[in-house]
Image (cartoon, rainbow, N blue to C red; front, side, top):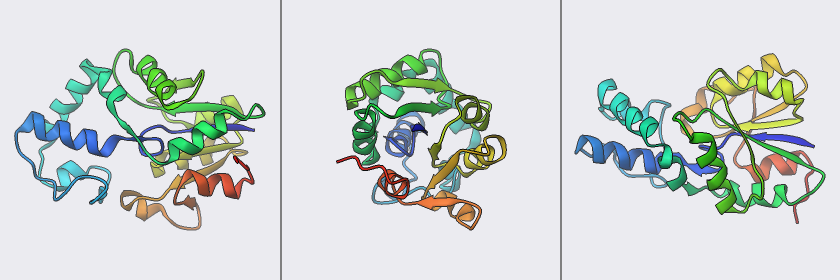
Length: 195
């Protein structure tokens, strides 16, 4: 089976590190509490809590200038399932992300290796993930961003796309989407026994 996985929000805890960097750069903590106590309520949650677009742009400039940020993220619980899946020889696993910054691909691959993925195939795409899923002829794709799932559904008709449920994508949790709570739910639906 050919499976594509987004990284941030599926395998890596972007939320906590991002919030910590925002507080460090701005010198102000406007977040009510950090993940996992409070989940982001919307996609642009720092602005929701009062950070300006200029402040967030400054944070992204720092991340792009120093992509080592991507190597410092904590794994989410889905990482365990991804490692088990990668150890099954009948599966091709692809990690598809839109992380910016020169060297982001290499740092992401290194981070995945430290988590237990032997030789990760990392693809960086800032133009959407549907085209990549179609080109790779993926059977399954998992992401936390509803727009990415819509792109996959439109451009890779044979790929079964799953949306990991978070408060920031509740607007998309309807009959159009295959909504799941975790990677384990995806693998159960796909009858992938990882034990």
